[in-house]
Length: 354
Image (cartoon, rainbow, N blue to C red; front, side, top):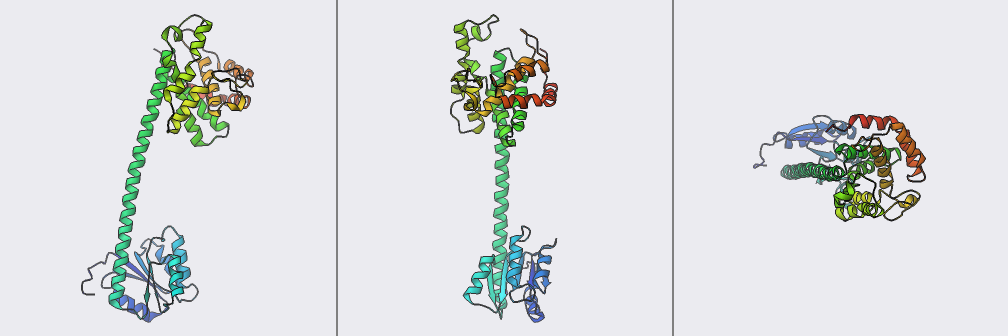
C-alpha cells in the first residue's frame, strides 16, 4: 500500500496454525508494524496477556485444540485483553460464521485468500478506531476524576459549613465546638455497633452536628438564663426542634435532609413523652435515637461554667436506667458496651480551656 505510513510502534499478533498463511501475513504487515506470531489459540492468549501485548490481533478460526472463536471468547472475557481489536481471517464467509464472530466481540472479518491492500487498510482503520476509543476513554476518565475531586471538595466544604453552623448554635448555649465533634463521633460508632453500614454511619456523623441548629432562633434571655426556666420559657425552648427543621428546610442533599430529621426529632423519647410530636419507639428515626444518646451522654460528662462534668460511669448508668424510657433500650445497651471507644473519643477531642 503506497501511502501506508510508518507505524512500527504498533504491534500486530498473527494467529494461524498454517506456516504458509503466517508467512503471507507477516510479509504484508512487517514493513509497517511489529509482528508477533502464535500458532494456536492457547499460545495467542499467552502472548496477548504478556507485558508486550499486541495492539491488534489477526486470528484464524479453524485451528486444532482451541479454535479462533474460543480464543476470542477468552480474550474478551479478560479485562487485560478485552479492548484489543480482533479481526478474524478465514476461508469461511458464511453469514452465520460472521454473526458468531461479531457476537463474541470480533471487530471485523478478512476472507482468504487475502488482498494485501485490503489487509493494510482494515488494520489501519481498526488501529485508528481503537486509538480514538482509548483517547476518548482517557478523556472521560480524566474528566470523571476532575469531577470526583470537585465533588469531594464540595462535600468537604458543605460538611464544614454544617459543622460551623452546629458550633454557632452550641456556642449560644454555652457549649463548645468539641461537643458536636464528640457527639458526632459517638453517633458514628453507635451506628456501626447497631449494624448500620459504613456509608449510613458516616451520613449520621455528618448530619448530627445540626441537631441543635434551632437554638439559633431562641431568645438569649431564655436560652442563656442561669436560673430555672418557667413553664412558658421551657415551652419556648421546646420550639427549637421545629425551628431547626425549618431552618434547614427540605433539601436534596442526603446529609442536609437527615440533619433536618435529626434536628426535628432528637428530643423525642422512646416512651412517647418527648417533643415536639410525642413520637414513640421506632416511630422515632434511628438516626435521632442514636444522636439523642450521644448528645445526652456528652452533655452530662462535659464541664461547663454552670456545672461539673459527670464521670463516664455515672453517665453510662443514667443511659442504662433511661433505656426503654428516654432511649431506645437496645441502642442504650450497645452504647454502654462501647465504653472503651467512648473514652478514646473523649481523650482525642477534649475541650480547649478558654
